[in-house]
Image (cartoon, rainbow, N blue to C red; front, side):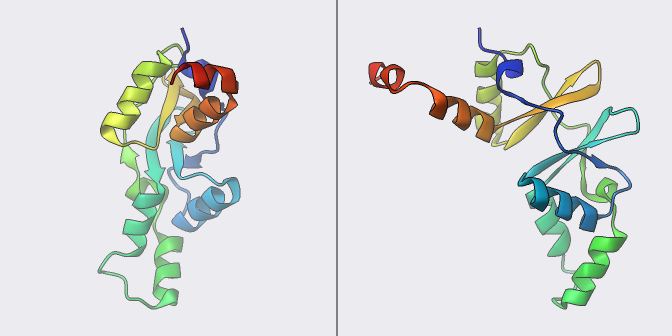
Length: 144
């Protein structure tokens, strides 16, 4: 059986609750990711931030369209202020098919992977696409 452990990204980039949104954006841009698990000092999963969360924070009606105001918000707000607390997560030994169904059903881009509450990876739609793309052409033709 194909499991999450077979597909997940191990040791993903993370944020701390106290990181500014400016830091979070920089990290996401640098790593090319759209979801960022938020962990505490013991690497326990406490939240999740998506690129959508960041767009909503920046485009709030409370912020003017002035770039200086947007930068101020990004420096003042913390990851904790916009993260989804206690996000849906999965375990490394979960069935890859079950998690794919969960991602598709709820339109999640990724799920954090935890073991005993500690973040050990992240499984994303991109991980599934990369796996599918790596399959030999002969397997794909036999499915037609």
